[in-house]
Length: 191
Ligand SMILES: [Zn+2]
Image (tube, rainbow, N blue to C red; front, side, top):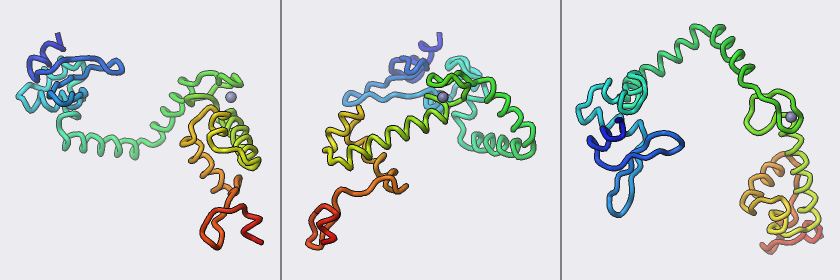
């Protein structure tokens, strides 16, 4: 079987990660995890034929070439890019058809959508609710740790959200740096 062939060739022990074959190499002080691309590279370097590697990894011949030959991969990408440019209408029609096919009902409103968690409208409305809650707590003087607790996230996760809110002018600062170089409430700094 494929796992035995890979182990016999490269050593180590085959396992699965996210449903795909990986090779675990025990180096004593650390374990190296080789994904299929790396396995293909090493098997090819070890003299195996493209077809043999393809069978071992259960992928197509072209994939093995792409994985084990950087120059070939570059050329394939270039050709694919050129194909898209030359057949723009066809590619766009395909993408559109495909987008329609993979749509599922939004778990919040039930409208068909092609995203990951919920439809764009629901995502925006959830974000808006979240932002207004954050702004409310912040302006009421809640400590960050308590805000994070209330929002069921970490303090570190609040930071980027609040940064973006500030960039959009949705949030101010509770403190400003006063003339003496330490933080003080804005009204005190103005005085
Ligand atoms: Zn929705």
